[in-house]
Length: 249
Image 1 (tube, rainbow, N blue to C red):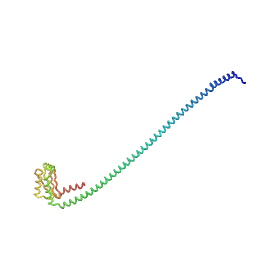
Image 2: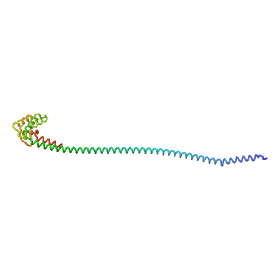
Image 3: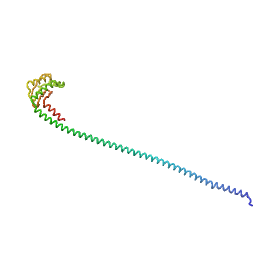
Image 4: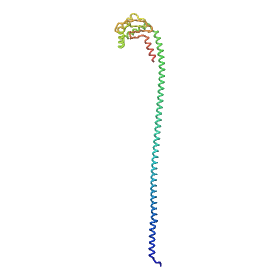
């Protein structure tokens, strides 16, 4: 039968305790320290990895946000460009339409001017022709009887002379330093001269010394010159007026 040896047992216990102490101080602690260091390094690496992942996620979000902003900017730029193109096209069409309208207006004005000029030429030529024909006809109709009829009209108009012309005739007569002059297309008899002299004196407000002359260029009628005042009642003056009007048509 095997005997229990307390000495051996105690020595074994001591050996175990020494072994545990040795393991604890020379093996277990360094291993724990190594494990702690490794665990700390792993933790730091995990934190670094987590930080890197967070940074990557942040960068990804920034990139996505920037991409969205860029997309919005691109869409806004595209719309702005389209608006500018549309505005430029509209302005270009408006300018073109205005230019065409202005050109059409100028063409119409030019055509109107040409038509007016053509009508004026035709009218002037017609007036000149009418003047020539009228002058020729009146020259053929000129006669002492026509002159006498015009003298009668002259006396009627002299009696109904407007106030302004009446005053002008009186001023001319008052400053008259020479004889008044009566020119007639045909010779006037003594009765006709007396009637004209009396009518002029009544209108002028004074007696006038009148010289009577014959002037066939008047065609028919008479012309009275009293100083600066001239009274025409003859065919030549009417034709001259008609010719001036025809020249300005």
